[in-house]
Length: 249
Image 1: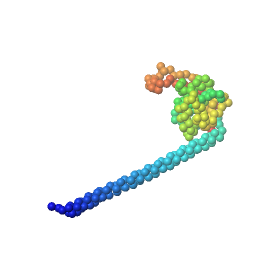
Image 2: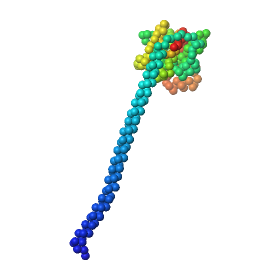
Image 3: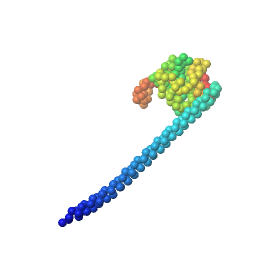
């Protein structure tokens, strides 16, 4: 039978062993928490560096966009400073197949008091009734339609490729809602006949309206009738204009 002293000694040994085991289990846990803290710190640093890179990239893109705008403005100024030269229809320097459909043109009608313009992709230049003509197609839903109906003349203009964004704007926004000339940063000029032309364009044609009529939907093929039905718009009007003047810069 163990006496009191022996029991005390045994309990003391057991206590020391228990404390030793506890310290051994706590040490790895403390190291693990420290390592985790370092990982969190490192990740925070990486995220901060990434944010700085994103910020720097955004600044570079902003500076690049500013340079592109500055270059476009410079080109516009160069174009504005050039004088118009009148040419004959057979001297038109553009590929007729892509002039409307790919390059896009801007049709304008009206007078100094009130005029409107829009980008169009449907049109052609050709010969009809022994006259050199421009043919364009405009939906009656467009604000420019009203000006084409009320005026005897219209103009179509070509713009440099650098102004593609302005052309997209002119086709997307309605003159009913805002001043498109100001919105596209254009400078309106007026021909001797009082029709709108734009200083930033590099090629312009002035036309006298000699025919205007809406397509007869009953004569359209089913494919074309479906085209209008899907878009929920009225069929286009066709305008044929006799070429009066052509200018080039």
